[in-house]
Amino acid sequence: MHCPFCGNNESRVIDSRESTDGVRRRRECIRCELRFTTYERVNSMPLMIAKRDGRREAFSRDKLSRSLQTACAKRPLEVGAISKIVVDIENELHKLSKAEIEARVLGEMCVERLKILDRVAYIRFASVYRDFKDVDSFTKEVEALNHLKYNDETKSQLRLIEDDVPRLSQRNRRMAKHS
Image 1: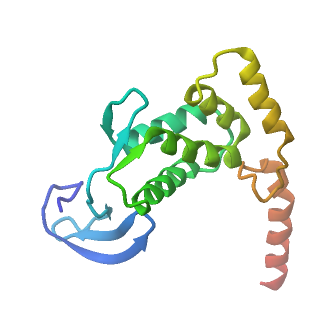
Image 2: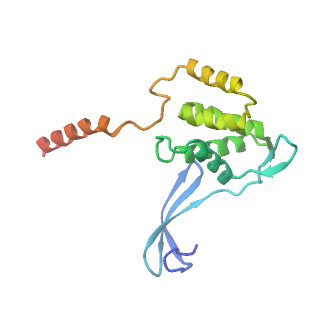
């Protein structure tokens, strides 16, 4: 492992933790003593995606992430929400234990998660993925979405900052009294 600061190839592991997408290791360079983090993933058989037109393409988490970021552009989402979806989908694909997955299956996984995460991102993604032929089919999809019930637990958008300000100031006052 090369140090990103000085290029030395000797480092020691300070901390190692399992994460959903592999192993996270905190390292310290032997030469410059600066610390950095590495992520290790098991390199398994490449997953192939079978496209509608018959082509086969290797699964790319970067491509999946880019398409989700495009759908979620300028939406008030929690930091890391898209990365979490990508990891969840990749893990689910590997659990299927198939060397080849239809693009339709991958698309439905994305649609399911975006429907819960953000309605606007869902419609953006669905409009490209489902390839609506006319305005009526698009309108039907939006109307179907409006009929779904969403509660605050399934909504993972950020709260407004003003919502947190009173609670934070109350907590600080309580902590000051106990000091």
